[in-house]
Every structure is written in C-alpha cells, then in structure tokens.
Image (cartoon, rainbow, N blue to C red; front, top):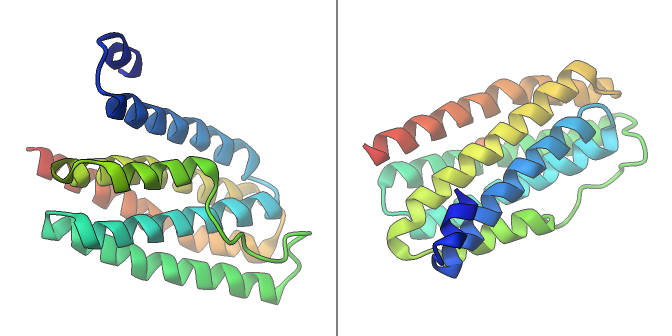
Length: 183
Ligand SMILES: [Fe+2]
C-alpha cells in the first residue's frame, strides 16, 4: 500500500502515515523478540507502550468525533494508568535486573505516531487513532504474552500475565469499533 501511494505521487501526508504503520509493524517484531525474556526490555517496552496509549487517548478525548472513540480513549487512560502503577509496584517489590526506573518519554517511533495524530485532518482523526491502536495493541499483546511465558522475573511475569487478557480485550474492542465505524 505504501509504495502504491508514493508511486502515484500521493500527498506527503499519506506517505508519512504509511511510514508510521510500517514502523509500528517493525516495532511489533522488536517487542516480540527482544521483550519476551529480559526484565529490562520488558519494563521499557511496557512503560513506553502505556505512555504512548495515554498520550494518544488524551488526543482522542480532545479531537475524536465519535463519542464511542472518546469512551474507549477514556477506558485506555483508566486501564493504562493502572498498568503503569502495577509495573511500578512490581519494580519496588522485587529485583528487576538493572532496570530500576521507568523511561520518562516515548521512543522515536511512537513520537512519530503521536505527531501523525496531531497533524491528521480533522475528519480522519478517528480512523487513524483506531488504526494505530489496533497495531499498538497487537504489539503489546505479543509483549505481555511473550514475557508471561518466558520472562526472567517472577514479579514482572505476573504483571504480564494479568495484563495480557486486559490488553487483548482492548485489541478486540478497537478492532470491533473500527469495523463498526467503517460500516
Ligand atoms: Fe489499551
């Protein structure tokens, strides 16, 4: 899709959007392979994932058109605030390798995704938000299920095991909403 749009000389915005989607897919692979076992990588990826979702949800509360998108955004704020607290308390309660604090900002890829949400034309916001959320949640489901199965720290494994079904519900919710709003 990305190449087709570029070849047709489509708007820069379309190319940027395509790059963001590709970035998200590549990121999914990274989270899945690198985050599955090490506490340090798991904590970093989980915390950045939460931060990205919280920021994106704030943008959705301000800019989404559909009340249902705003509702799901509020749900993400509630649930990912809780997940971040669980991550913090797991780190306080147990050894988590050399990862002793949470990152304070998102990575470049998610920064770019958030920028896309800030720049997208008004009438395309809901679609882009849901597209990003579906990809981001697939990535987080991989991260959580991978670490829950093979992670090196029992405390964090239990955070991942309890987070995985919640994030899977988020993914299903986002996919359903995207389908229904597109119909
Ligand atoms: Fe979520």
